Image (cartoon, rainbow, N blue to C red; front, top):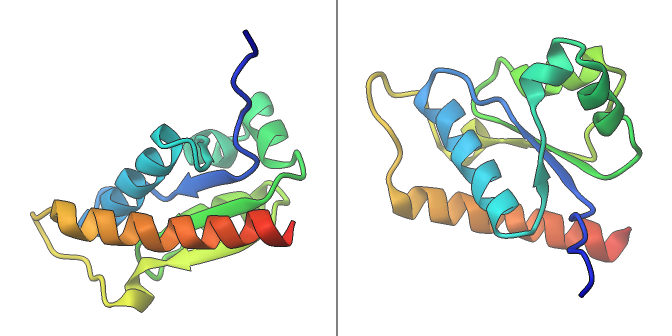
Length: 126
């Protein structure tokens, strides 16, 4: 029996405290659990955890998902010397911070599908 292989693409979500940040996290988790990408820890990259920085710098395609204009995932990667292959900005798709709310399943599904299409293109191009 062969070992399952890791997906080629790494995905990082800002995963902050806003609803769009949690949407980014939900999308990254679904991509990871669905086997389309490997989610890795952006807090560890930003915090300089050696093993997580090594993973980010491994040369694999990287998709960063940021919920808002602060671009926290992108900045953490920049600080580690990693340029994401794709930078998904949820606010550019009409998704906004809404205080005290979460996005519904239909929105999570739609965004997961959209980012999954980006990942599929990376696999074809790479």
